[in-house]
Length: 344
Image (cartoon, rainbow, N blue to C red):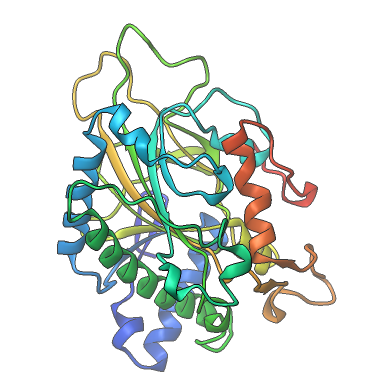
């Protein structure tokens, strides 16, 4: 098995362009990886690297603006999950029901960009939350079109990955497609800076606290700067994005969908040691795939048997997301299903 550290390397090109045997072999590799770490280092994805570089460029320009300027793009409604989030306003470990100091990152989020003229009967009931308008920055001027181009590329890659996941689970390649045609995914850019030596991190404070992601999958582009760690059977292990590729990890929803056959792995971002030279800034862009808000998520038929009955009741994707989302933003423990309590 080809691996990069604890993360399995997966070349998607044979799945995208190969025959049935090629697709099956990629599916076998994915299944083995998802049963162990739940993380993949994906190449052969078909996303032009130019759009990745341009998205990082406009995002960095935004984060380099003064704080008071960035705060103009903050939304008061936390459930909308849009706009700017200043450092210290979230603590991701609360999503696991665990208290911690606030995390050391700033972020900017967007969701599906639905113009008012295109709000229909599906969008209207949840316009304020799952399809909230995005507070787009007014500079750089290319921010919005660049982000929308990147979003489109991530959505396409997300569909390809879910097709490969279906094959890996012994299902038709289009099995998940009906749950993704109006998905409520969110894209988040995250910026981490080195702490001022006069204001060191609090005891136990992380750049991003231990958490598992909430949805079906996450596609992460990031600087090749140390900090991201995943929790394995042997303890914490460093994870680095592949050259020219993405880290992909499973979310809680897919772990429940597969009846825990696949892992939604806890991960964190640790601060660089104080006083150590070398890269301190770490930038990442995560695309969190969330199925349609009304998609009924219940254990897949290939992941249950008489000896392994369903461990989770059916749930709508939207309700599942909101139950996880609000704890970290309100700095309170989320309501976590006892069956899904984490091992940390």
